Image (tube, rainbow, N blue to C red; front, side):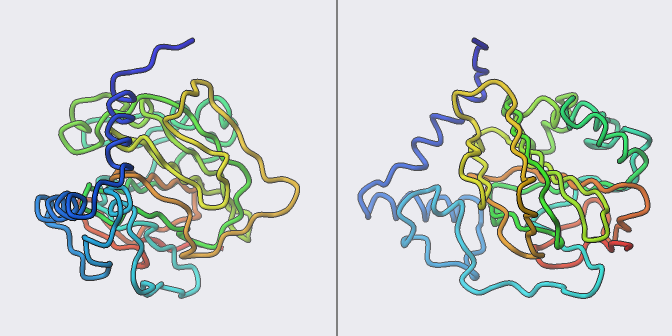
Length: 275
């Protein structure tokens, strides 16, 4: 059996603390301390004291639905995040951060080797969620989910110091890979990258997928029996703390309408889909 990496163990310990419901006064103190320490903007959410655990605060739900850009072809940001890198793949190479590259062949694993080649020279966007961000992720476009791969891995931090220091960070870390198609048959991959203290990533429509569990081999889930369409803006799942979402599209499909080093919000347009 593979030996667990220290980052997975630490994340499990933190997860137990964050999932534990303390007495109401203690929990209220913890929640308010977290909000004040990180400077969370709670204007769209319930008061901090109403969340029974720290994880409930992390995964907080919006009080009112966000406006969604429903213009034809508009691909929205699936998250509140900071765009660390975006642009065009150089064959199979994407930027982790300036000066640091990785291969989408490695990121998508041998399970999607053929599919990865269809993305060569396509478009990509890296979206980093800080610990203070809204931690739910949504579908960026009306897409059919064809399969999901859970690839266990390490849980290095994904902040800027780590992106600059750790080679192939997204390839090393555990991740959930969502293979999707547009109505016109265009291929899009959504990759949810785990990080330190983000051992848990959920998929709203499939509770079989359990990340940072005692599982070491990749697990593939296919949705062939009945087409599984998820609409733009619908909940896809949530991080238990901040992390990163990577978007990839085949060549000619996605025109990027944002830029790196930019803050984006769930619901606003970040690209245009050509179909």
